[in-house]
Length: 387
Image (cartoon, rainbow, N blue to C red):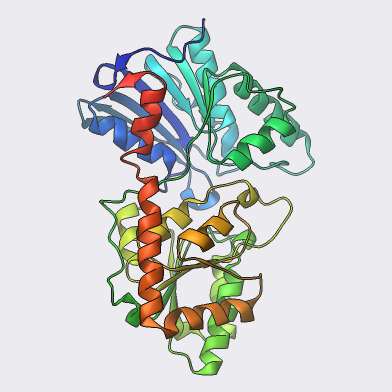
């Protein structure tokens, strides 16, 4: 099938498949909401991303701006074992004009659909990059081959950051860009998201959002809260997210005798509830662990955009590629990966209400660049779709 980068089609008269892993708010969900809001026919297939998301694979169809069906299929496997089953759930997807695959397996299925005439165009939308996805194993080599195939055979390719784009090109030894490639960063629903009130510094609450795994540095936050408690600084923390470290972190909080100051919410499925919890905070933290193999080095973490859209002054380590820009323009502060340094930054962030309000406004102003109402619209226009 001849590749085309423009159809000149009306979105409302077009059909789309969105296939992704994960149920938390992200690019796939934002694209779905945008297309549904414009009246397109959409079939959205979401597979579990991690063990905490269970065994259910959800397929939802939308027509004329409303949901017309929703099917949930339980596969007796949890990630990562369930990834092998993802390409077969559901067994049949309606024919579409555009297939969006948000990972190599999802994109590869779209390539097959295009080959048999059930998709006109296929778009690979990569949400991260890891040089060795599954370590130095044969599984990584298979994954890389599929990823490279998608990078060269899809009609369009989307990356979250130029850092990820360049790293993937180098990793796969791609000369130039075999297909049109766009950098589309993570966004936030600017008008929808509740923001921290101007007096939010008085809430004296630190918030963390993310999957509870070692690279997120949540242990460092607990150490920082312990340090602040010993100093007599009035502060508490809310940790939003589940993960394999949840029980260990709860035990660590008990060991540090800060149980009363730390609340673990676990995985919160509804993004509206997540946004409400963030708006209750005063300071947000993202103490990523420095690591050569961390995909955060190449990513545009969605939680940082959620923090900014809520107007939260943020403290983070210099791991994401946009960390320096956030410090310069978005009221963020960079700290080394150290509990004492994190505690110092939190305490300083709460000392001056005037400076806190300045950082809050800087976050809100910066976040306006990344409105989910605008990013998908501009991208769809660039590939030939009319509103």
